[in-house]
Length: 294
Image (cartoon, rainbow, N blue to C red):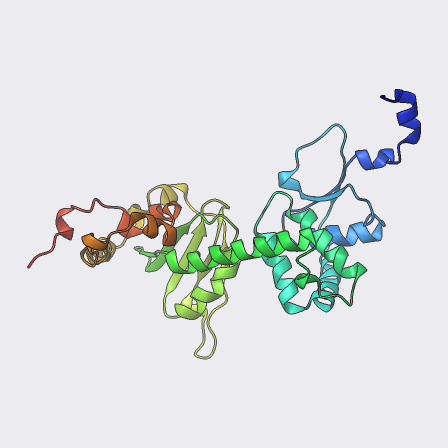
């Protein structure tokens, strides 16, 4: 038999505060998230089961949620970073950073729960405890980010411009541009190049004139880029670029063996979402300049 509402109210064991989410908003940067973690512990909010850490640009205002914005504080962020390095080690800290770069809508809260778990149990190998659902989700997220990083390093296509800069456009699922810069910096030290993330509106630039015989130049961040260039990159192609693309398209077509064609496997190793920035995918397979000449 159902109980009267008055009895249910009297016997309830859930504090009313737990029904109202407490949200800490941080500036959308890793330093911003670290500052939010510092704020939570400074104000003793870490045991609030309804606590959420959310990036300011992802927050949707609610009538029932209590949201507090936290400014980025470099000193506090650094102290938290040092503490995490002590608790989690270099590999664990890398997981935290890569997880943050996934930009998942709830990643700020997941990372905080992992950090709280590490602080509560400092002698435990937190990142090995896949029985903890937050750690498990973080590990799975890091694997996805690592896979995207590997694909970006393999699928980036540079186009030579009139300014003698090799320029590439990308749209990765995750914010992996900060992770792939070192790969290209070490590999292409003898040329100017830039990679621009169209989805996130920023890129990285390498200026070889700033390098030395013993050290490659530092990467620079670029944010202001002409929209016309992004819409029509052919407008800045050098005279040789079209010839380069034709050579590459011809090679890609002519090494293909029709009898062994497997579109399903091809898409598995080269997902179709990357194709629009691959020069070998921009022409019809029967284009005249691709025909074999024997």
